[in-house]
Picture 1 (cartoon, each protein chain N blue to C red):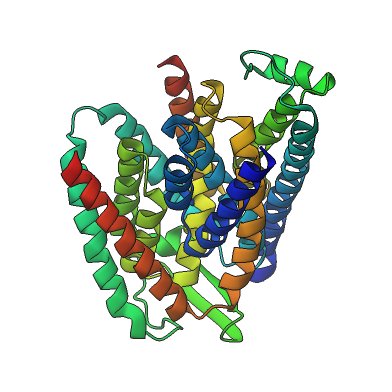
Picture 2: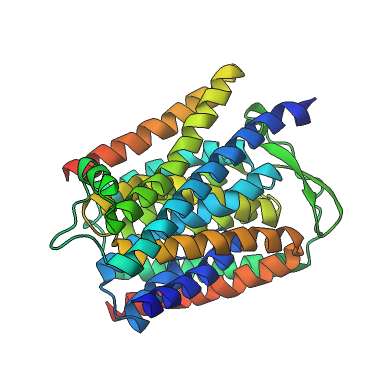
Length: 117
Length: 278
């Protein structure tokens, strides 16, 4: 009984991680190969702003493609926290909804404080 | 350019393999490799090491979570302590002298290595862990299939409060010194919460990704994550950690413990030397 119910959480989280990893690894790999052939695609400084990265991807700048992949990789653990939250909500597991929300709040706080520093 | 990438890829493969097995981020391999051997600026080495932590965590966790070696609930519960600790650490930086912190925590790690070494002859299946009211309330227990034993291992968490406090300390240290969060997590789960060794390293591995994700966005926007370095690191670590998770599931807990103790002694000596030289 317990086994089956808990299995759903594990399968969903595992698949979230797998999709995130495969997607980001393929994009990073493609960017790296393009970098070997064409160079970085940038003359001076590289912009790490999301808009510039996306524009760079459309113009096939190798470093922009790598950065998109890296961003997806960074977002993968965050996605798995969000997915767990959704599962706990569906299961009406109030203790763990509270625990997950607390973790997300602390993460957001440290992120905002880090940015404004 | 390609040659350098191949070197970074190879080192990262190894870092991912070891990190996935032991529940560490791989920074202990990536940072010295990039700074000492390739003479890369420490800022970019740290940026690459943060990427390595996330890649190790996500790469191995896909398998560990599916095979139920990672305990998702224990991880989520303890993440309150580690994230709060990291936040505290970031605030009190500068108030404490890092020299003494390195020596103090180096010594603490060395002592933990001794405790963990003493447990080497423990039976692989832990029985008779006393009931714990908090652990029962939060469902901090589980069961996984151990491939090296060929049977199911059932467990529940003891010492929830000491474990939680230790996790908070782990968070503070990683916030202060920027290192070693994985090691302290494994120690907290193994020594204080009496979880099976494999559950401790896999759950630590799962947790480090979340903490690193928060700080990595900051490093990324500051431009510390250089694409030409981070790309081979990410791919190497992802492949390495996938292989590492397969090996770990088949290892005996005793062997895993001995490798961990060995790495623990290495890290603690490095921390003490660093403290003394500051």
